[in-house]
View 1: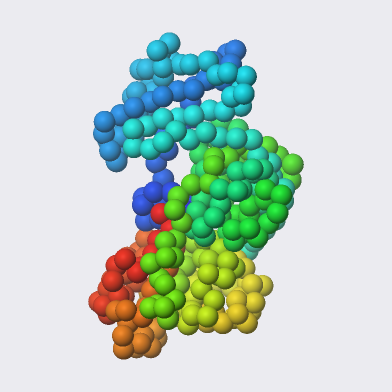
View 2: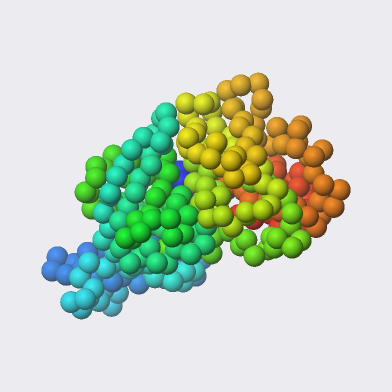
Length: 322
């Protein structure tokens, strides 16, 4: 969801589609065309999927987006709304929002950004959900929400964003408090935590790399896993590039075992450390007692999933937030 969407950098966050979490740039239909007099609502359709859909949609935009049959004048109550329709998803309508604060979260382009999204915040009910954000006429960026549902009052949502060069994330990271942006309603189903009932899932493993810690933080702070045996494997380049350093002791005081993995050291990567040190500690009844949440680099997610399923953990108990 930014790094993925589910990492806030690819998220994005990064994710909102499977592509986003797997480390690919999420597909978006782009911005709807504008009329000189009034904003417009553009409906673009394609019968293709994947890369073919993206190509077809761009062709459709060139051929038909400005056709009178595709442009509708918006009524007075829709003067700031722009929607883009594709046949693989519902229309996305963006509403005005404002940057409340923007501060450095770690070395490099990681920023803690708080947005005032107004009544849209009420749609955030499950950790792992995300929003799309546009800065001016930029393409939408997909960003997982880092704060827990209900953590902020007054329509505020917090994000951890990696400002990758040339992306909407970079534009957002460069904004000052008070700047205007456009935000979609809260999207996605989030982590399906109902698949990990406390009655049968006593141990929960969480794996995050980079800004993929964003929706994992939302899960921890929500208290949804209170009372479980929870271990977090958190991979970053080094200490300076680690977001939420100040929260790690707080999480540990709540019973979360935190295993930090630094790729610049000789530890290896998250999946290497888990294979070397974590697999042997899984309970004998891992197939029924263990669940997992993953958000981060594609390779990490694939490797950890393979290790867990080889131990008998059912795929439906290995959760992604998309």
